[in-house]
Image (tube, rainbow over all chains, first blue to last red):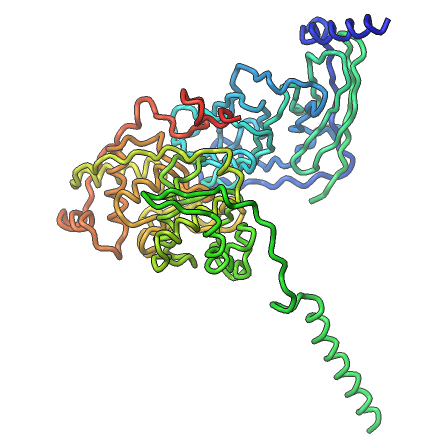
Length: 236
Length: 317
């Protein structure tokens, strides 16, 4: 009897990654309370970028983005324990664009050692300066029209990245030991697919409001679990 | 009368408290013997500069004598004097160094660090250490390496080659000027190299401390050496930990020498053959096109995959 269970479990583990049997965790991230007021960015010193924004809709900082219904965008939700997929590095590269003197996207989540391509679409120079601690800090110039910069990070870390020429340009490279992650969209929703049945620890991280964790169990194959995170608000 | 005495008494009492309280609140300097902090084992750290081999065991004593005051017992740049120093002493625990011969994001060579303490850093509180023997300086470099685990897990980068200097002409200066505009050096260093570019006032280093760009006109000797090849190296490697990025992927060697020739002309208080040439041309630099960037940029960093497995970040693990 016991043997049979073990066999089934082993079988489930073996065929687990096949999408047909895999479960999904999805949900929404909201905030309870205030979030820091986002400041208007003065880009007048960089006319090449300032012209991308209408006067009625000036660019703003992105340290906490609250949407309708208190939802939070740009929250990284990832499986911090249980997925055991450290070795599986996605083969396709993630892309970071610099456009209108902003990072698109503000948060770039990627797997340890996954390739990253950094592009400059602006008619002005940028320097890409990841302020890494566990990884290596580097700083490269990328004038307009320069080819993309290839980057790679070999340690899991939340790396603030900035452009020193344009001090308002801030972002994060979120380097994770898993490829089961999702960054919430403008509606605060996320979805993590291809999870075989098992117990997982799910972590949600927001650059200003911190992080919180929840335990999730995916029982059967193809099960979809809904997990919602609510961050405590912080005015500053 | 009695009332006055009473109030005087209470006044002196409160003054006494006011003096005593801050004295209690902070540790009297030098009053308590400071425990000797635990630093990592040093015996297996060495440095190799030419035919001199430095030993961290020996360097430890010299570090405690010469360096600890600013760089601190833990090598984190928080020595007793650090609070009064700007820019702050180097934090050796991060193993991020400005003056290197190696690509951005890599460890410097032992020679880089040796040259740095030999030369000192102009415009900072770091003096030259020429009075110490080369052996002592090499020992210090070996000891400095004990503060970061990186020196165990990573190798120094491969120095960026510096080919022979291309001929100095008024045209090479002109091409360098076009590059200065095109690469937007002026955004920080200013249109005339006077550290007054639009981004200059906003710059911070990697520890969020304000930092000023180099002022070519009044900054004196450049921090990482004042030869033409030193200036070449500065912008090719970038000064890690500062806002100065690496331009190694953006410049061919010829273009890089052009830029050096132009940067020299901005150093108005340092005589140079580059300035003489501009003066001989009537003080005017002709307007020309900037040289093209390298066709296939040599990826200067070992963050990208390399055939040599020992150099790649994950190769050693």
